[in-house]
Image 1 (cartoon, rainbow, N blue to C red):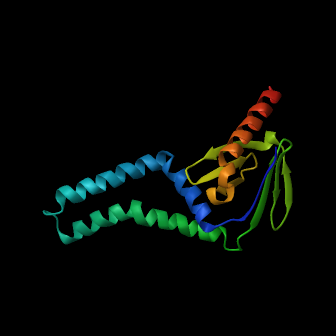
Image 2 (cartoon, helix red, strand yellow; image 1 turned 90 degrees about the vertical axis):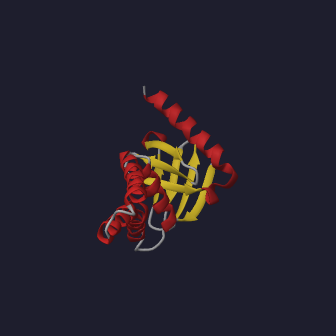
Image 3 (cartoon, helix red, strand yellow; image 1 turned 180 degrees about the horizontal axis):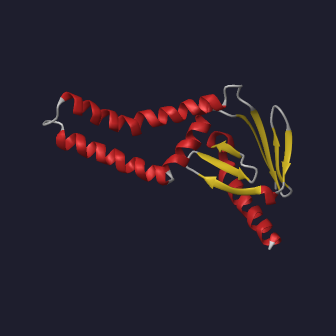
Length: 162
């Protein structure tokens, strides 16, 4: 079985991956608590507050709902400032073949850490610190088949190493 996907990396892909990572970590718990606290503070203290304190409360809420996601988006833009690379990823029993605008790399399954399935994207993590984002529009109807295949190959190669 072999799966091949060719696409250009988009800023929105990097932003989505960063947002999923941020909100599924401890930072996400802190963000959720701060958002909830800001809303409770605004609702309970709005009438009795001065204009300065109202401004601080709104800015506190905006910090986690607008400013932080905007900063993550700017970081995604800066990551792709040298252009949007075109990727071709091929998953086979031998491993993962990665072809970009600049180089070709063949990665064995022992060098693949994991695959993470999120609602709109999947991320394949490598031992060298790289990660490859596959969005649903690229995966189409092969999304679940690819996920099952990669997990099977990771499991088989983990067993072979023991």
